[in-house]
Image (cartoon, rainbow, N blue to C red; front, side, top):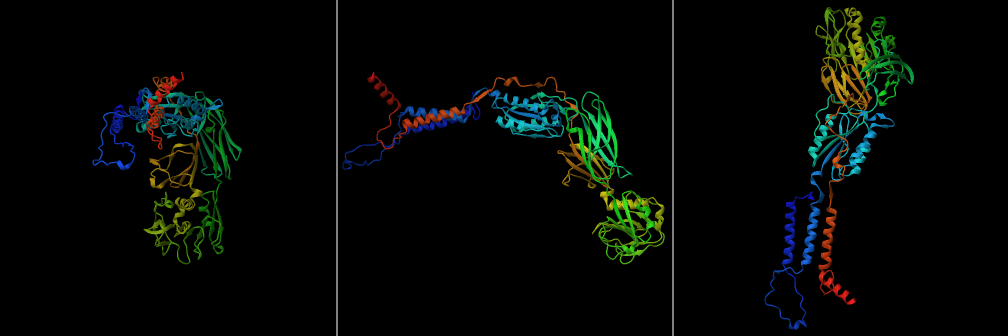
Length: 636
């Protein structure tokens, strides 16, 4: 037997102090004696007050014995006296329950997770009642499902309610987390027990502690799954979609897997992937559409994990850019508006201008209306009234054109010795940014307030710029800046949750990059060269916006681990035989507290003088026994 809450020295000290106080109360007799007299007439009060005398012997030893015994039993209950061996008690175990994507694999009618739960519950029921257990669900993150708990009902409920996630398991991280929990909150070091599929994201598992135990290792059958799906529009054909599919064979046998693409539930493409064991295989497919709809990419296979066999994308309809052009010389602008098939221009004379239009962009050629358009606009050599860019002065013949390439409109524009012969230069003030200059004076400016607008002080088709490649690129950059949702580079990627890596343009600074979730909330990321990395722990849509390029990541595929963990041969396995015999110690405090209370109750009944209205003293237990014996003899 051993004490849980008190040491033997503490128990002895407490009993000595309290027992000594009880004995002292019995030796110190200050009670008054009752004396019967015939009348108070003959009562002579004492001139000297009675002295309190200490009794040299205990008047009621049986009462003292009962009280001392009750005190002894109550102190033993307070110290939590236990029957058994302290070496095998008070252990804290951590159960690492694998909830990674591999646990969704089916082995017959049941998943691996269902079988693992049964094994974990069997292990829990084999432990002593005094041991505490913490259940930790492990995948990409280690999440405690319970604290260190002795309530087996709560522990089993946490195990049975666990569900498989869509991420891969990090074994090294899970073991480190379990060891930290035992150091911070554990009373006595128990075991770290793992049960699961043995498929881990770690390329090489770290060294395991000595108290690690492998409960069960459930392996699934053959599996093939999608690793990544990428979609983008054709560079020169807006109706063409290119689909890139990467699949992986997680099994040990070579497989030939059919691939089917359906758009709006109608087949649009198909193919066949030849997958070697443990290898990737890529496929490229095309289909054409103008309308928006739902694209499904599916592997036609029956394997262990169903969730990684298909991916679904919601694709937008092709959007055309409607442009209203008010010009009296439309032929000069037609070549610049034919640079992209998505631009749909509508040419009208300047006298038909109206500020209300449904077009996304309005071009005003050699025309400055009194009522500005209610949409984004491009002013080309505006005349009549004040310039939208403020004060303007005529261009002096022979002024050399130069570009401010830090602005997106001037990005990538290079010209040789291009000189302007006519036009206007602006004193750019307020919200206007300089795009190009002529001998250091602003000749092309842009503004974002109250709405986006670009003002050209000269006509590109009436200057030497018409012979340069920079002329059509200038208009392409202007349209891209005005309507990035139409001309911005956009890609769709289907990947698994976890760590995501996106390629961006070189020389981009972190302040020019954003990673946003479904709700538009910015996420933290790291930038290494031209690689942006961020972690997504849940399924959803994520956008990487870098410069004029946007990449959309649909993280719906499960992160299926490739590495098969090979446990060391000397590792502890299966149910521990140490606990097969049942509990190593038993609690006694409930019975001790009951016995102590009973002793005090008997003392109060026999010696407590509970008959308040009687002048006859309560007989002692020995007197009662002697009267019973004498009565029995007379009856005999």
